[in-house]
Length: 293
Image (tube, rainbow, N blue to C red; front, top):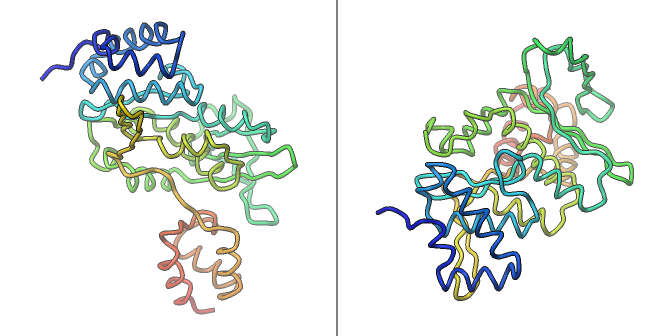
């Protein structure tokens, strides 16, 4: 059954009343903008209207531009349902609003740019000039932050680690689905977003908006116009990784010793404890227990 035109849906009495209660005098401008967007794409034309409207309203609530071309937030159709997506620029924007970040960025890493590790085990990256790196192979991705209090952190995932992540947390990528397969069409941008999201979720300062963004990213958002209740469904696997806390890492080192932990990481081809996920902790303990020194 074909969806009703977006302009008709948005001007329906119940919908318009709900929009007025949230947007006030901005309602007409919002309706015009979303109607134009919905008609600009064949896939968006066929999307469930409630899901597309909910995506746009989520972007409004986070004060992010709702346009894929801008790279902050947009809707991605998945089997005729609009799923809410936040880009790397969106996460950076939300982080910078806290006023606690001096620096935050993500970037591809090319062959010849890794230069060992620093005294705490983080990788050292020495960037080649733009001219030198132009034709070098992409070997991984990094994200780095510096807070105004001086705290700095860099994380790095190899290309193979990014591929494993996408295969594990995105059903569409795993199946090479023609639906919502943003990983295949925008691999570098999705990788950078993944690193930024992992970095600030683990080491950054999370505002209320940031927490809401992480929760709603890659989801179908449902709105009940009568109650204003918002619910979230995931078509893909949620893409939020939960890493080990500093205390959990310290406990591993205390229990098993740094040498055995390092050997287990080497055997598993994991760069550092920062890349061990919480749901992998028990398996990792078994791996460390089996290490002989």
